[in-house]
Amino acid sequence: MAPSATDRNRVKAQLATTRATLATAGIPLPWLDAEILVAHILQSSRERLHSHPDQQLSVAQRARLRRLTSRRAARVPVPYLVGEREFYGHMLKVTPAVLIPRPSSELLVELAIDWLKAHPERRRVIDLGTGSGAVAISVAKAVPGVRIEARDVSARALRVAADNIARYRLRRRITAVKGDLLKGAARADLVMANLPYIPEALRRLRPKELEYEPGLALDGGKDGLSLIRVALAQAPAVVKTGGLLLFECDPAQTRRIIRLAQGHWSQAEVSVHKDLAGQDRVVRIQT
Image (cartoon, rainbow, N blue to C red; front, side, top):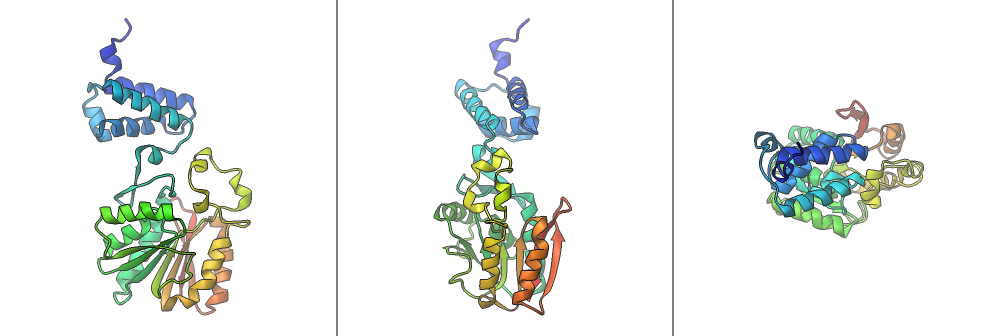
């Protein structure tokens, strides 16, 4: 016997339908995305979906779920569909104006926190390429006395960052600044940078999901280092003596970044740190 309309409208059935649609479209984790979308529609948690599988979706909710499912099947990233992403334990607003925060960038946060806690006299920080403000907010929440200049060239990205900074009541400690890399930046003890680093040759090979993210936040020029190279050249005039720089990068770029850094700070202690996936991800430069 075919399921009744009531049965088809229940959470359990809607999850199954959404999962099947996404699986047919080749989405890698269709069950996870289905849960996130249904939970978003119901303004619920994923856990509650399984504890209340018989909850009914309204006509409007089902229509909205179909629209979101269709967009996800077309490879629109889930954070853009639901308008937020968790990063380092903090839920952040995201829009197509900013890069979606990724777990690999949490290494940048951890290295910054470790250094700041070991150097309590050092509290002036620049977050270069702040985007959504994820890195700046995570560091500020973990180190109460820190003052951060969150810089980005995109006014649209800075509006998102400003919303997130306000959400966490950090406007007195994080200042969003529109600027061209470190040009005109105030002197700082620490610079943490997540600049675009995808080389030109790889842009055509990137997953379809990345086509929805801002090219300005991804494209690193011919070799992926165009902006990192400029930032490193500007940094000696900004970073205080004994300060620290942290640059997130592609694993294949670490050796070249080390050479660039040593060209500006011949006595610097330079090291490479791996992310949770075991990939070289951050170059640490102790001046």
